[in-house]
Image 1: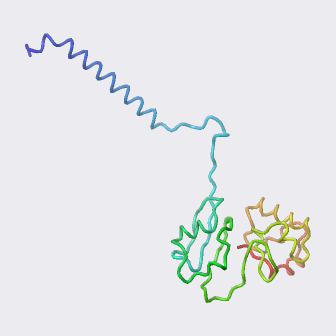
Image 2: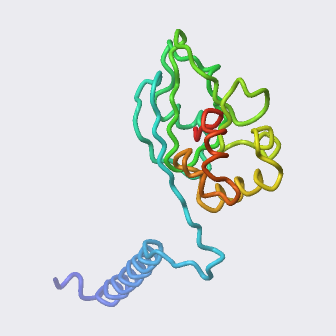
Image 3: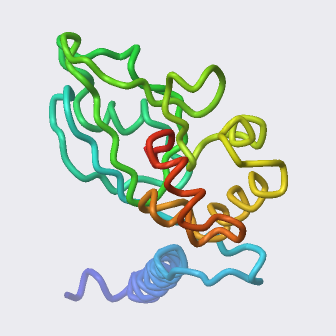
Length: 187
């Protein structure tokens, strides 16, 4: 102990510097771990999710929680991909998905009625959750105003959850719905 007496001022000074450095490091670490709130509402990012029911020839069929802007091929990837028996020509892999969408991937040997979002003759079913204004106007009894009303309804409601919801669109009653029932789908 006697040998350290001449150095006690140096030792105390070194300890004080060490304590100061440690306190500075701890305060910086504390600043990094404290979550900061956005400065304004413009900085806030709202993440919206939807649920999609994927059935048929995928490795892991089921209900998937995905981001609102997800496309069909992205959900299929989450489901482990298509099986070797999947008929990928039967579906639009780039189709945008909406909440409560049911997508069925058929087997290559299945007979199916093609479901698409838009173009072509009415040998196919028109997806009212995806179809363009022009495609909706090809349906019997649907003019430009009604087609726009269908698009407005699906945008406001987040899509049609059943084909019967089409009767909630202004200008579409039971008679019009009965004419369209076999020509439309929601997925």
